Length: 285
Image (tube, rainbow, N blue to C red; front, side, top):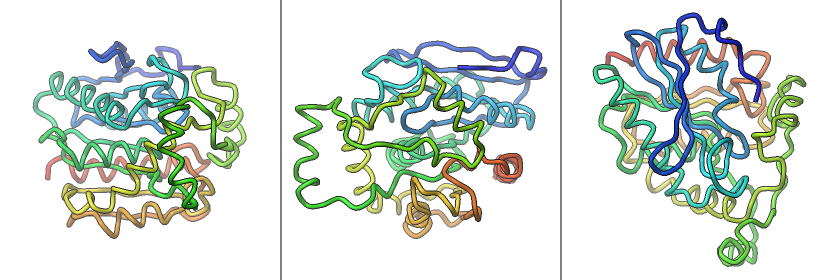
């Protein structure tokens, strides 16, 4: 992983550690933060790919915490295998509690992307910290694509007997229109570069299928973002959140022409500015 030099973050302090469950976490903190953002990364990547996002948040006065999911980045486990959705959610909960303990008097927000958006929704529709004031959900993994009846019937057995079997290819070329972002993804040794593991695929599928019934209980403020030209996860996934969430304060944005990682597109500065403006408007509500 390539990270900026210390002098690139003049107002932020970077730290890292391991949670009680063995998962790696890192933070970027500032003095007297206006709020805290818990970043939740997607499949086959890791929290270090969000360094520039954390920089933007700390520049706006927010502390940032992030965790590497099981089997991802610097956390233990078979590469690309999250083990279970429950384990991934537990990791987010632990780092959110750490952030809440360290910053007692400010609101917390969750920002989840792709599989991280799905993990965030599972967490937020379960038993999240009461201090969480809102969430940013980016291109959530809620549309696994067409699944045949035989595939659906076989998937749980496959995940149990051959959990590490690679069953689905993800094309890194779909994440961004910026060739440097794609090149860096392919060169990053902390990313998983093989096919999606059977266990991970089944955990995503099961969680996504059950999410419409859970979403009405999600009443906190939401910002839902999606790239209009996303070929990895169609915008209908975010539309599902818009149509089923119980929040009376829901901002829904489709960014025309952007691919899967809107925070890594050539227009990323405008996207991050939009998110920061939303955080600023909701940190005191």
